[in-house]
Image 1 (cartoon, rainbow, N blue to C red):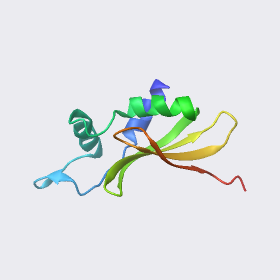
Image 2: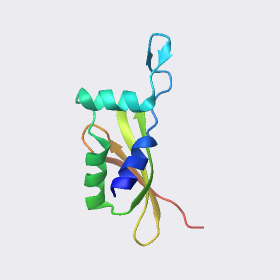
Image 3: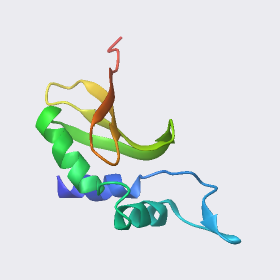
Length: 104
């Protein structure tokens, strides 16, 4: 799981236009700073909470802004092989949306 968390952390994507002055900030810096300010939960905590409701192997994580709130979008493969996407409020880890890929 730790390897998946690390790999997922590297996959974070935020607004590419956010930055300081002329030097754009990298996505992980934006996420790190938001966690430090207490605006969002750390990815590891969000994934741990998600695993209690939807266990599976995390394959992709994005951090986006949706309806003026930061949202973790997590794709995972369930133990029975289904691909699901779960959107969670990045500040609370509340599940906002759930989609299952159509196997056909």
